[in-house]
Length: 91
Length: 217
Image (cartoon, rainbow over the protein chains, first blue to last red):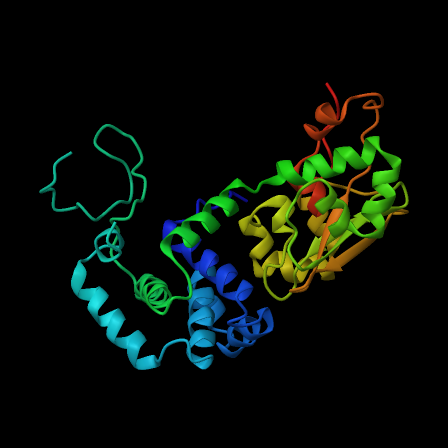
């Protein structure tokens, strides 16, 4: 029953979701569809904000904000920056 | 702190002095964290948002807490006209007090001697976050989301709340654009207290329906 102390990356996912929703880049229904399409085991294997970042990302790609290739390239680049979140995010 | 310690990234357990390690931004980078960084950077580069806007949104989120909801409840207990407006349209009533409710439809449900209300989001985690902040972890669990509708009395008992058999329990399933907040019954013995004193009696759980307000000392 403890209140989880959210990590910075989790708060950022939440903020991106709110900002992109308010700018009309996707709807809450679009997010929910992406979450439900993940299949039942996604709810066993992934944490709350892991599922949300996946849903936000899927909706942004579908909406043409950026491409799957751009995402993949960027995630590869980020992996080379360093072994921790702090190093990879630039502080 | 020994920077060459082989367990530098292993933050389980206790330090030699017996102090628990707190996780920081130095745990190994996960796939999902890389995705968050990538999504955020691409959104900034495409001109959708800015680092300042993201920081401001996190700041706003951090500033929201059940204190906001408690102020609304205490006002309803002390101002019958406000209470009527709150029950008619909770979003408008909360906006009247200066709270940003956004475009969603907010519904206040009143606890009485006859009826006890409980809120849940069976699908995910919809919650009156503008008035209560982010939902507690248990609110997002599958156990609460499924059991709150199937066996609400048993769930309430686990929260320490045993209701008389004659009390009707109403469970409200929140959706993306319709959120609920419980208006708890004013505790006995609190008559005549100021709104500020009353607000201190209003707990988060009493506005979800899994608890009752505190009793005055």
